[in-house]
Length: 341
Ligand SMILES: *Cc1c(COP(=O)(O)O)cnc(C)c1O
Image (cartoon, helix red, strand yellow):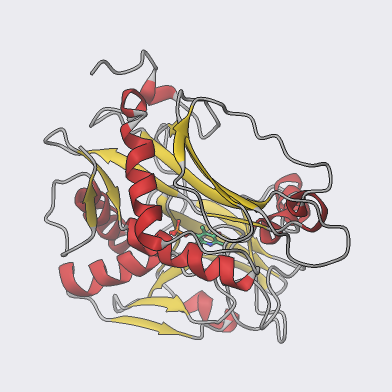
C-alpha cells in the first residue's frame, strides 16, 4: 500500500480530511451496525441536542507505525471505557466498548495510506466522538445520537526541539467539584477557550487550573494532566475527582514504577509545594509529555530547576520509555498495544 505524498515531518496539529470515516446511528432504541463512509459532512436538525445543549463527548488517541512496520494503537480499551463514562454522565447511549475498539481498528485500516511512516515523528490522530442528533427544545436528553470516528495525520509535537513551557495559575475554574471535569465533554473545552486565549494574549503557553473550592491545590491544564518529580526522584501526580483521567499520565506512572523503578504517588498536590519540585510536565496523547520550565503564580514565579532549555532527566526517561513502547522499540506491558496491521 502506497503512503500518501505528505511532508510528514512538517505537518502541524491540524485537521486534514482523509478518505474514510466511521459512522453509526442510535435510533432511540439501539445502535445500528455502523459503517465506513467517505462523506465527511454531518447533516442534522437545526434543533439537534448537540447544537442547543452541547450534548457531546469525544476521545483522542493515536495510531503509530512501529520500528518493524506494524501499525498499532495504544490502549484503546481505556478510551472505550472513558467514553462509556462520559456518555453515562451526559445521558447519552453507550457505544459498546468492544464495538468501539473494532470501529477504531476499522477506521485506521480504511485510512492506512495516512498512517505516517516510522521515524517521521508524525502520527495518526484518531478522534472518536458522539453527539445528540435529534431535536430537543425542552431541556432533556435527545432521543437520537451519532457516533463517528475520523482520523487525521499530525506532525511531530516537538518540531525543532523541545521547548519547556511557561504557564500561569488561572483565575478561571475548569471543573466544579462533582461537575464534569472527569469526563471528556466538549462543554469543558468550550468554557476553557476564553481562559486559554487570555493566557496566550499574556504570553503564557497554558493555564494551571487550581481546585475551585479552595484555589490551593493543583488540578490540571485545559487538556493535559500534571506530573511532578521531587528532588529525590519520586514521581507525583495530583489526585482529584475533577481531573480528567489521562491515559498517558496513567501509563507514565506505570512506566515510572515498573520500568524505571521509581517511587510514584497520586495524591493531593498543594500549589505551595510546587516550588520544591525538580521537574514538571504536562501529559496527554498529543505530546506525551511537555516539560514546564516556569509557573507564574499570584505569589511570584516558580522556575523549575530543569530550566527552559530541555526536559528534566526523569521527564526525558519517562518520555523515551513510553514513546519506545508505543513505537515498538521497548516491550510493552501485556495488553497495551493493539495491533491493526
Ligand atoms: C484528553 C485530556 C487529557 C489527556 O488525556 P490522554 O488520555 O492522555 O490523551 C488531559 N486532560 C484533559 C482535560 C483532557 O481532556
